[in-house]
Length: 260
Image (cartoon, rainbow, N blue to C red; front, side, top):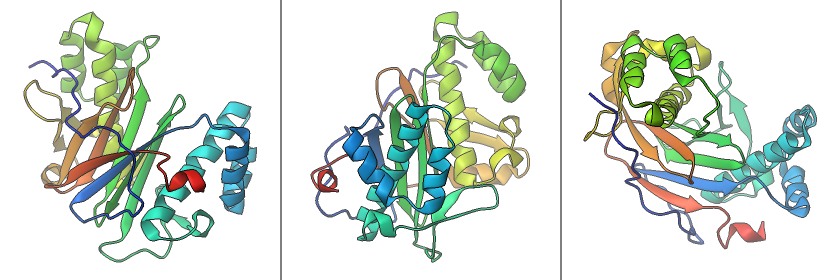
């Protein structure tokens, strides 16, 4: 069984409407670039909470500091749009393993979100009433991916990667990685759920899927995965609780966000 060629069965990235409507059967995925002007970075910085500003100061490299500020600023703008409140009025809380959530939003249909960024590109997934995780990676060719897979993936996943032609192993590795990371982020369990304790299928002719979870084999049927192609040279995956949802992809900033 070989890995399927990557595809993007999602709508194109388009400008969002003035008013955002998010149903319980929808997943909104936003794409943004983290390289912004100095004035935009300062605007984002003013909207951050004190703990976020303190975290920004701890980055050693200036580029990383700026990217963090933009990533959090865009997150606040996106969530503020969904909540109909100013970005600076969005408040966060954190789970026991560090997963962020909206403070004070605990009802069944509350908004959930996930964030990932890599090499200047960021993706944001927003749902209502469904746990969600998103992961984004730039495909790198300087890594010994077969060795990394042997260490972190299940034996079957590592064997499937080794069986692929050398020229496609790098991309296949990052596809596996993003699917697995997206699921871990959706669960919110951090490193307490090792990557080799569950399997992902990327079989040709089939959508990506969670095959099995050692802790609870029945848990796999409660989740679905969709791969995304956010930009040339990048791969991404979305893990969402349940089935029967559809994805809408937005490009940030839209007309409404340009005034923030």
